[in-house]
Amino acid sequence: MDATPSYLEQLIAGGLLLPTGVAGLYGRSQIFERVVEAIDALVTRTGGGDGAEVLRFPPGLSRRDFEDSEYLKSFPQLAGTVHSFCGDERAHREVLRCIEVGEDWTRDQAATDIVLTPAACYPVYPVLARRGALPEAGYLIDVQSYCFRHEPSLEPTRMQMFRMREYVRIGTPEQVTGFRALWLERGEALVRTLALPHIVDVANDPFFGRAGRVLADSQRVQKLKFELLIPVNSTAQPTACLSFNYHMDHFGQIWKLAGRDGATAHTACVGFGLERTALALFRHHGFEPAHWPSPVQSVLWPSA
Ligand code: AMP
Ligand code: ZN
Image (tube, rainbow, N blue to C red; front, side, top):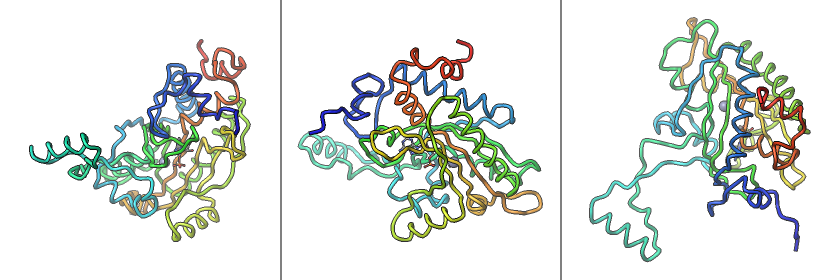
């Protein structure tokens, strides 16, 4: 038997993550949150001069917008829907009886109009589409949200509920690809200042099923997704901590996002996994931020 505690076990023993009994669902300690907030603020300092519009959404999407987004075509395995009790008193007694005897009590739960946000940028497109034609300069949006993905795992980097900080660009193909190229540079420079080993590589999303294989291959061939990967877990596989996505006109078509000339908008987003980047820092610099290399501390807490 392997006696070495896994990274997850170390994080729990060190008090950084608090187990709930569900894989991928954790409480965060004060130190963990301090680091997450510092990464978030560092992203703001990096992109803050660009004049992005700040938008914040609760971690839920309208079910209608979620259906329109075609998420279920590509990632049915990851989606989480919010259900609620909608029955009468008899049905209520039945729920309590089921819990009492350990039977399934969820039969009378009905879908609400809310679906859990799968990626921080999803609520942005429909909201902006409702504003009408795009302004000349397009949009640059700053979002951050808790996201849900149904991918229970014992790797601490693969959570079911986690935060994603994103910048989203909506505009012409030139505006959008320029944005992504800029953030590929900025993202790597940011991670370098945190003294984290990393590589940037072409990637694909986990499209569902056999047809998904074709979509994943085409995404790679067209280099639509890049990831910045950092070794975090005990496994040999490094973890994607930042993503750089070019959706071409996929969301523009779905949401009818278009300029005044009628040309369908292209979109791109850069996503920072806040927990993953924090976990990378704890992995490489230890569990005590006060003992991290001083250049790293100065980058994260410049006024301290
Ligand atoms: P993606 O939309 O899959 O490219 O995700 C954007 C970013 O969110 C990734 O680069 C990760 O840093 C982070 N992320 C994705 N899935 C998870 C997860 N299950 N747990 C924690 N962070 C995640
Ligand atoms: Zn996004």
